[in-house]
Image 1 (tube, rainbow, N blue to C red):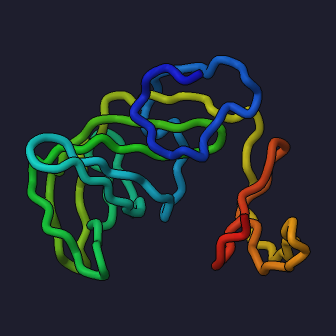
Image 2 (image 1 turned 135 degrees about the horizontal axis):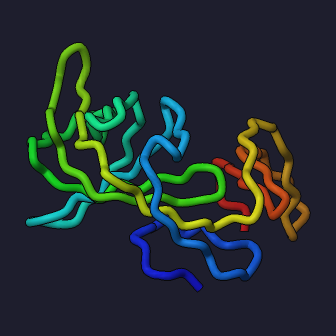
Image 3 (image 1 turned 90 degrees about the vertical axis):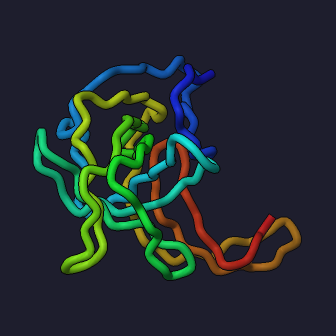
Length: 168
């Protein structure tokens, strides 16, 4: 169903059964918001690791600034030149590009400058856009028990729901 694009989010689907459209675009055409989550997958020697960071900002043609990954509340050590595949989701598409760390900074807080990509590969995976919401919900299971949950996004093709306990 999908052409080969390094995207790991198993929740993504085309919702329509149509063949996804693959294209190249510029990073600033993606229209990411400050605070959006990006996935960094390490490249090179050693075990492959995936980290989630937040977008702090970017300067076209210069660098992308993200938070430094953490694990168990501790900042992970990163080195300049370390390579990553960056993945993100925006609107109806997933995007990916290769980059490396240009500069590791710790002042005024830990953050990374990533090399700005020449182009980004995008893949349309949804027919309808999702709207971010934060709605309290009650879900009744097949056994008749009620569970507390939150709706975190809605679209014409479905919704994403979060809950503290497994419901199924």
